[in-house]
Image (cartoon, rainbow, N blue to C red):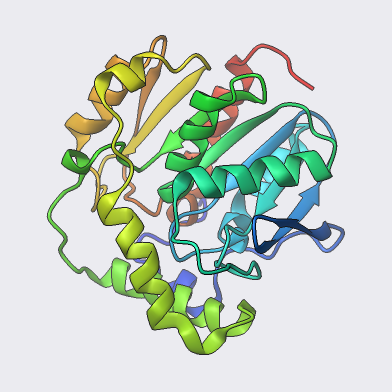
Length: 270
């Protein structure tokens, strides 16, 4: 039987799988923040961007699959998340995108594919829009690109467990563990007010994009995901069955299969 954690009870208790013991880690200073990253494997670079309130460790079930398939997995703690610091600037997806470019520069990575989950998907797509020379393609999972794309919020046990995991990780990893409530409010402000892409903005994106939507996503409307796929030239729409907003940790095999199919569809990059 393949691994499943649909209720997120395991994720709440112990998190995702640990990152490889031989992962190379480091930091880069960018625009007032110290950005933590991990570098695993060799081959074409794939940058994994986690969701809001999370950290790079949330990708633990994806790294081994990517490395085994011949990719170099680059994981980034977004500014103010995980081990990364932040300054007094408000959170923005554009700013976090510039942090990703700084990591790529520090690692001498000219071009990378991006796998983005929730807030990380927004960051990745904005990167692809503004820096198509640096981004080989974007796997956009579980996010909106304007405020109309979200469902009314309803707390569920899996959401509570995910929040619990994020709170535990923040206490263990953050250089400011006492500021969790402030962190949540600052990230929430960004999420409530950004991004604000128009159909015209979407139509000018010129990198390969797959829009992935979970069958049971608690936050994002299916018709919004389908609209994104229609509006971005050449974009593909993929529905992930039997999972929700937390697919990478609920059923990693389902998520990883879609990611590897996307990466395999891209023109070669280095």
